[in-house]
Image 1: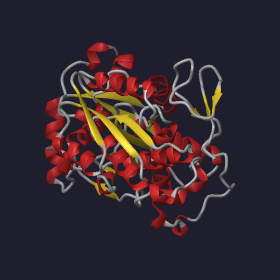
Image 2: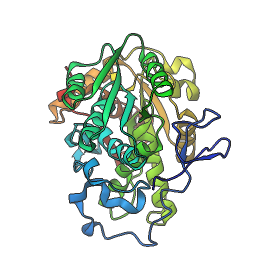
Image 3: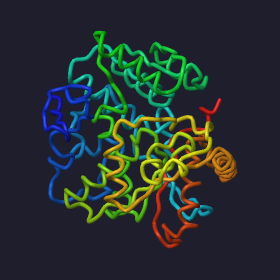
Amino acid sequence: MPARLACPDCGATHDDRWRCHCDAPLSYERSLAADCPPDPPDPATLNRDRGLWAFTDLIPEPFVTHASLGEGFTPEVDAPEWGARMTIESVSPTASFKDRGATTTVARALNLGAERIVDDSSGNAGAALATYAARAGLDTEIYVPASVKTAKLRAIEAAGATPVRVEGGRQAVTDACVEAAETGDVWYASHAWCPAFLAGTATWAYEVAARRDWQVPDAVVSPLGHGTLFLGAYRGFQALREAGWTDRVPRLYGAQAAGVAPIVAALHGSDAAGGDNSAADGIQITEPVRIVEILRAVDETGGDVLAIDRERTEATLSRLHRAGLYVEPTCAVAPAALETLRDREAIRPDEDVVVPLTGSGLKIE
């Protein structure tokens, strides 16, 4: 049976909705740590052949075999130029971290008996959901910006999904998809709204902690658009602490694209959020669905959010490539933000910092 959902704003519970009657985003009714044993497993005994589904005690959606492609357990490598460790999410089946959320979202769709799903995406989430839906035998439509990168569009089409190109900004794409979800016989597999997606991205935190024998790093710096990885990490580290497997949550820092940085604007004002960064196309989100939770995560962990401009993104991207880390432009905002945080002494040189490199450079074109 699919897990029940609850509204953090009004307290209503639901068998399934893509958002509450009060329009708030939903979360799982029970904690991610509700079914955890009191003691963590020996990291050496985790069955990595199952990918992220090795953490079934921390994933509320039942495992569906044909919704998995072995996603998870991405490599973590040293990046001495930035004094950090970086996880290589680009080795995921569709070459981005979105596979983590896609497998759990499609698992929920299957548990609910859905036959047709839709989502709106700038590319990576759409490609991931299309691929996992194909694995599960679900029909899929992905609403994308008319300017979507060719490589990402090709991945959606190759999986047999139907891309629906929408003119206008990223919000226009979402609006068109929501209209389709509310008027058609489809299940809205939204990576922004669906709590199953965050349950999948939370596994990134489990892997980071397991590698450290159930210790957590001092800080995490990640790109931040809708916050699906940022909030997944937050929820994951919270669940580990709640289960008693770890004793704290790391400071969480987000990197947004200058000119489209609503979290930065909320924290530091519009001047700090201004500029241009069209290079970071994966995080061009003007109205993050879970902005309240993002702000709470920043505050509770003692983190921060920075806006990174196009010039710094492109310069950092070139350095990443020269360091053998072939990633897409959106990835570069996080290492760039890390350098600023070090300059401000918000992150000390001796601290353990982890940066997820969220997508492959093969998707640049």
